[in-house]
Amino acid sequence: MLAVAMDGEAKIHRNKLTANAAADRSVRAAHYRDLVKRFNYFIKRYDKLTDELSHYRSRCSHLEGQLQVMGPEVYQAYQKIDQQRKQLDKLTAENMALRKELAGIKEKLNQQPKVVPSFVKANVPKDKPRQRPGRKVGHAAALRAMPEHIDEHIDVPVPRDAVGAACCPKCSVQLAEVETHDRIVEDIIPSKVVTRCYHTISGYCPGCRKRIESRAPEQPPAVDIPHGQIGINALVTAALLRIQYRLPYRLGTQLLADLPGVTISPGAVTKQIRRMSHWLEGEYDRLQVFLRCAPVAHMDETTWRVNGINQWLWTLLDDRYTLFHVDKSRGQKVVEKLLGEVFGGVLVSDFYCGYSRLSARKQKCLVHLLRELKETGIKSPAFGKGSFCRRLKRLLKEMLLLKKNKPAMEVPDYQRRGKQMEARLQDIARQYWHEAHADRLAARLRKHEKELTVFLWEDAVEGTNNAAERALRPAVVMRKITGGSRSERGARATAVLMSVLRTARQQNRPLFETLKTLLMNAWAGKNPGLLTDVLLDSS
Image (cartoon, rainbow, N blue to C red; front, side):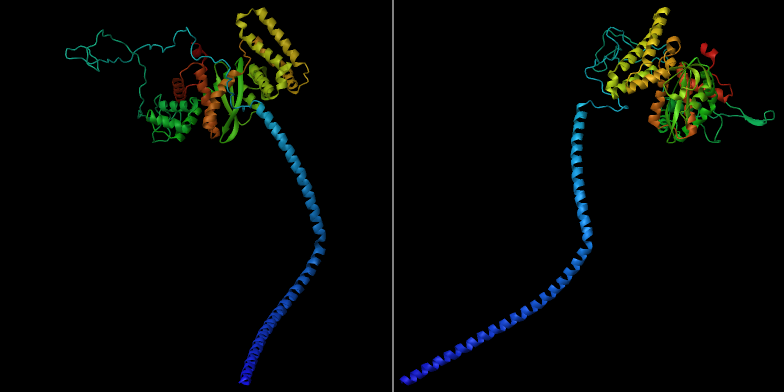
């Protein structure tokens, strides 16, 4: 039994050993397969890395060749980078310095008073005493003058009660102490359009060898037949709205449509103004003739745009006549065209060189000189505080004041003071001031030495050219509103009508009736001369 048991245990042990050996072999086989698989993987990885290494080696060789070729360029690039870095540092330093300088300039500008542009008026200082508007205390009130006659009387009654007594319109209580009053009211009658048909007769005249037609004095010459025309009142009104009151064409036509109710286009107004200027050419030429014979004439010029091109509007005037002229030039030839090559009177003007070569006695505007002293003193404070500016400014003001007080002075006293002022002017002009602006103005005084004191000895001559500047001021306003003229013909028409209307205003003539009379005289073929008729003016 023991043998059998031992034999069974041995058998079991052998089986275990066999099973363990089989399991061990299976594990070793699996481990071997895994090693083989990993070996194959590393072999493939090795081959791939070998290929990549070959590629990178060839690439490295290629790059080394390129580096050898591009080496000088790289070196130059590095040098350029270094130069640009140095330049950048230099510019950065300059920028910082300029910023500091700019900050200093801004600080100085903030400390200085702001300079107002020349076309903007400076604010009035707050501490300057302001003149109270209106008349001074104690003067009589300025009321509307009473009319010379009454055209219409209108009764304005109050309500009446049952017994016929006057009562209050609100509470119907009888009024006590009833009085009557006269309340004067001046008004205008609303205008309206009146259409007239002139029945005329025409026929051929063998003596004149042309066809003639009857025409009423206020009837405009026939044009654009058979269409209607604009009457003389509408023509004169349109011309006044455009030239005298400086309305644009479109606004003028709107005003005519709103008030009297006449319909007219801006183009028609333009055409009619050109026609009116043609009819008034005779009066315009006579104004020029009379101004050429004037003892004293003022002259000035300003810009005037014609179809977008800058031209010049000239004015020539005395105390009774005014002439306007539009020209492309601002040269001396225009002065000779208006005044002639020789002018027998005294020409008052500014210091523009275009007037210098005219053969005539001249008086330069002292206000222009005072204005330049002031403007130069603002630009150069050293000049403004200098002796030249203060002495010349005081002398010019004393000269103008002396002429103003001439009627109240004795003749010897006036002549003595006038000669003293001439000597002072010569002394200022002939000195050397060691200052650029002072020396420049002193040279001008020497050049025009005999043209600065003529007004002291001629009663009719003024020391300023304010008359010409006042004549141009409405034209400057018109230029700013309308932009000037659109054609040469339009500029000529504007100059002619402005001349006629301002001359009529100088002579205290009613503009509407004067322009109407001038047109009717031109239509009737009468010789021009209403504004220059000496006998009529003296009467």
